[in-house]
Amino acid sequence: MRILVVEDEKGLADAVSALLRREGYSVETANDGKTGLEKALSGRFDCMILDIMLPGMNGLDVLTYLRVKEIEIPVLLLTAKSEVDDKIKGLDCGADDYLTKPFVTGELLARVRAMTRRLGMAQDINPRYGDITLDLKKGELSCGANSIVLGRKEFQMMEMLISNSGKNTTKEDFVSRIWGSDDDSAYNNVEVYISFLRKKLQMLHSNVQIKTRRGIGYCLEGA
Image 1: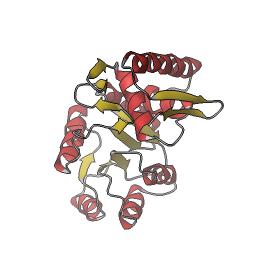
Image 2 (image 1 turned 90 degrees about the horizontal axis):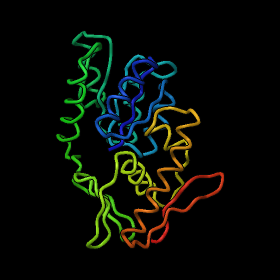
Image 3 (image 1 turned 135 degrees about the vertical axis):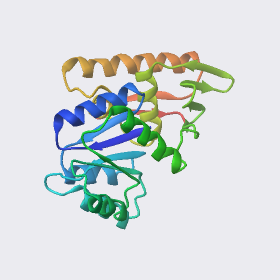
Image 4 (image 1 turned 90 degrees about the vertical axis):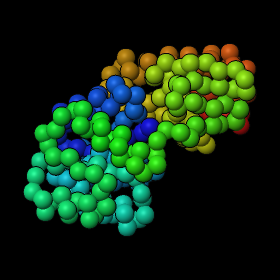
């Protein structure tokens, strides 16, 4: 599952992202309202954690715009404000839930799970491309009667590739959403894990291949 965290306090955004990644989620962040809105409009995310007090464009304006455009991504609002009126305003704008800072990490995770489950977005639809299927519950990649368990990062990368089928996924996309770091080692890891996934596709005797587009990124072919 892909989660967008829009929070201007970089330390908090990084901490929330790390927490969610440890739980197996793919995470991307934005530190201002306009950037968060652009990413949310892409349709690449299953859930959004949105701070109200943001530079450039506040969270309520972001949320209102999304709902006007009929973008129904589940949204959990974060705010330092605790007044009842602010909570009501947020929910009236289309938020699915509300959490006041500071919060306990366990409560954040529970609210994310409850929000997606309540909206019927539990991970029960397995992504497919060509002759391969990604089992979200078992963490397996299968082709026909053959299947193989993927490591967490392999799984996250394959999910991104399938979700972006027909498009190129850049190294920057992988690094931002899986490693959350832009140092050289993270970029090198992308190539290593792409190699692992290619070998596993071969082991499954799949027709699907991961193609490298020089200077652009990676994409699936063979559907």
